[in-house]
Length: 252
Length: 266
Image 1 (tube, one colour):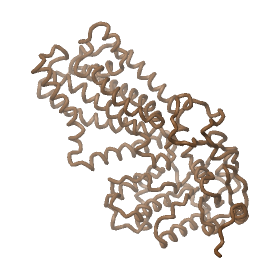
Image 2 (cartoon, each protein chain N blue to C red):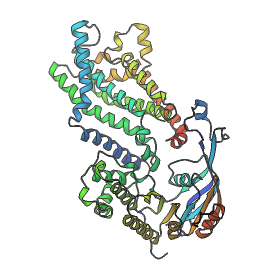
Image 3 (cartoon, each protein chain N blue to C red):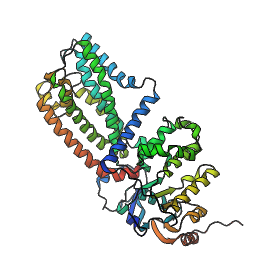
Image 4 (spheres, rainbow over the protein chains, first blue to last red):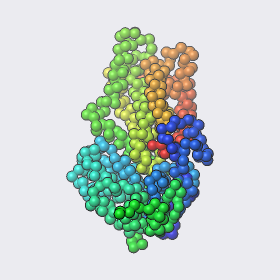
């Protein structure tokens, strides 16, 4: 059993680079070049020399402007992209709220989709069967269980997707601004669910532009700028640092 | 901390988890294919049936065939149905990542599954199409020989071959769009370069030697051995088996080397 002092996420001197021009042609040589090589002229480091440890139960908010590597960092922690340098180790199961509707298939019914997505994230059939009603209730779409997914409204799609991932019961939750969609009352419901999960001792990794949300959930803040981690500390200080570097526009 | 977290549910690990997910995605593929069209299964056998009809007509009534064996329709189908698996899986593997890009971007599952699930679902379709062959075999009175025991070997060889090729093609297509077209072209060439409408026995000496390096020669020979034991060539099976394993090794290597770059690209 993991005690609260052990780290559940460890990021060690991580760097990842991307190509600047996505359409640029690639040579075979590029493809087979080892990870130790230097960045080529058309590549840039989206993140570099980033290190931190996350202990169980911590709620971490990632702060920074657009394109400074926040979502990339989240994907690295979710292990859906791999770093070019350094190491990411995640010692517990992860419930990634990233592109949550991605696994849903238009032609299948909501029921099939719930079994599919929850299964892909590691739930067994009997577990899914046990929590199926709860998932549907939370998403408030009990009338559409056997409707093909493509016939749902976009709000319903997000609701059922969130509901499935939130039900995974994994010790680590990653949230990437997915909740920007959905109406206000459902959004509030999602937030309450996240708060409840935090109270249960889960670990949260949260990317958002909303100061209000960050302050509501997070205790610790990581401030990213220019591909580097400039600050790691209490969330209010991280936000203060960010606001000092990029002062918010005041209303006259 | 106010509450104690419930102990994490036991999650399947390693090979068990791999199998679970592979099966989930494969059955999803089959479900989608069969639930979206009214004819479902019929579609997957209509293509080989139509093709065999055409070849049967052309080579029996127009050209007065000297190749293959009699009954020719059984000879044709025993190659064509397996070719259908090869052809379908290879052409689908060019879209292995792009067709599920969102899912690849958001779930952490062993990436080889994206190729494997195509090979498996096409393979299952192939198994489902075997009754058609059986029907024609009974209808034409073809004899089943004890060599039918080699069919599982052929299936294993073909599975290895397709997986290996898929592991090479799937990641490379992400970088080289042209490869998708090239693959289609090569597949069309391979159709005639492999013993489907003829048998390797019909090839002149030099070509027969070259054909033994095409692993499909040995594989199709094994399938056909069930009805025409003469079609099995030990040399072709042996050479083909080695080629299959080499292709798989190359595939695993290419996949491992390019995986990191693929994930960034999609």
